[in-house]
Length: 360
Ligand SMILES: *Cc1c(COP(=O)(O)O)cnc(C)c1O
Image (tube, rainbow, N blue to C red):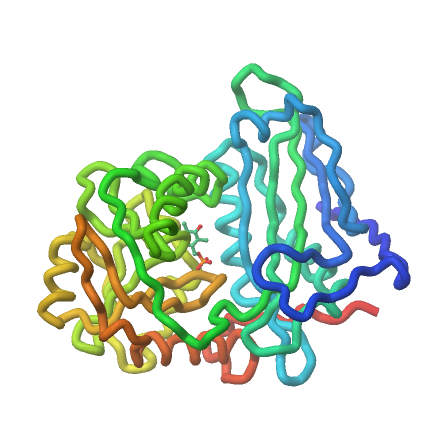
């Protein structure tokens, strides 16, 4: 199957200004990729064109029943001026797996990757130079059939937008404080927690807004059946370090999103001399191991922050401080190694990076 992409570049005089402090998710590059799908005809013509508003019917299924999926990855500027992607085929695989779970059509991975690379090379001036900054890439798919009767949509829109994002750690590599939710749950086994679909994120908002008011930056989610097993932290996977050398993360349960950063940590860490394991982690044991000092570090991992040290956990009115609320050496080492590979300043022994290629 060959699919063509029509490329309509935005004239230079109409291109946007690149912000110097973009923050996260508020600025967008000049172009977007779009492709529509209809049942019966499959994927239609694809285009890369000026980023613009969509026109969809007010009854579009995505607006009422949340039938949608998304991904998040980044493009990194290398010291030689080229641009790297990090394990993009993993994001594509997950995009299709998420799509299947919410009854949406799969995209052709090779074609999608080509579209993504063409889009980024066209918007290469939007890839920030500064280390720690990158171009965030957001592929998504939404259900567009105008139909209020509940059922899978017959029409979909697949699109990719990008935008520059600043360094996640503005004031250095600092630990976050985390509140363990004892009531609200993010996802349940058999539900949609494994899929990157909007419903999981709206389910988490109530608690994240609540803990922000209490001065915590992230929520730690426990499993929904026993209210006991550690699952994720915010929209990141979580790792604990025992005795400075053994990295432990919850094993994938069906309600945990399988992060690519998590997988990269599990593959990279043993080559740096750390032991790794995936286990069922009882929150009470974790908290007592923090108290006794057996747990020497904790950190979240995900594309946005890469590695985010956790300085304290709050549960049922008590606070548990980890590593004196300082970033630990294991977290820092993993952060340096992973970002080194992503930005092309360290050797990529795993074949994780791909060159975007530069369009004329
Ligand atoms: C995206 C995401 C992650 C991290 O996945 P990465 O592939 O490492 O970016 C973890 N948990 C949730 C809930 C997520 O949405």
